[in-house]
Length: 236
Image (cartoon, rainbow, N blue to C red; front, side, top):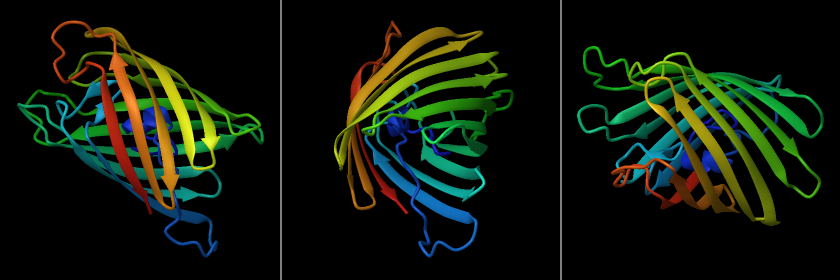
């Protein structure tokens, strides 16, 4: 997942998402830019919780962006929810506004869909997201994000997510980043998640190694315990 800042594990890191889109055409003509990404990861973690019961995932995204700041796209990943769903599809629309030369506000609407939803499951849901990013001299970037779902996954009521993160360049091709987030769902409770890791870029490929964890107690097994997530993303 990615609006300029989508949902994959890397995205948590910025993406840390890890995937700044690369134009499919570099002729520089026209106001539109079409980009795509293909990610392979050993565990699809969304806000610290595995969507694949600790197993690997393949993720594909396509995005169309206008030079005026508007963008839209679709993103796919395999998931594993046992009783239903093996594919997640995210559809999103957004707008990026430059507040200053170094600060951007990204506003987006996302819709998460899951195949084979059982009758009365109500797993598909809508989320509104705002991300503020500021770049300092030397390449350091900080971001803050808020996401609101009027009726979260599984018809569990109002959902809020808050996140703050930072990314530091080490050398031209290597950076370190991390983020802390807090998810609160009306009928499910709340928890905190965090991640820190390294992202290396080579040509059109990004490699990410990241520790991801939550403070969710109980028998999490491979779903929310701390783990190392490895990802490779091909930007097209």
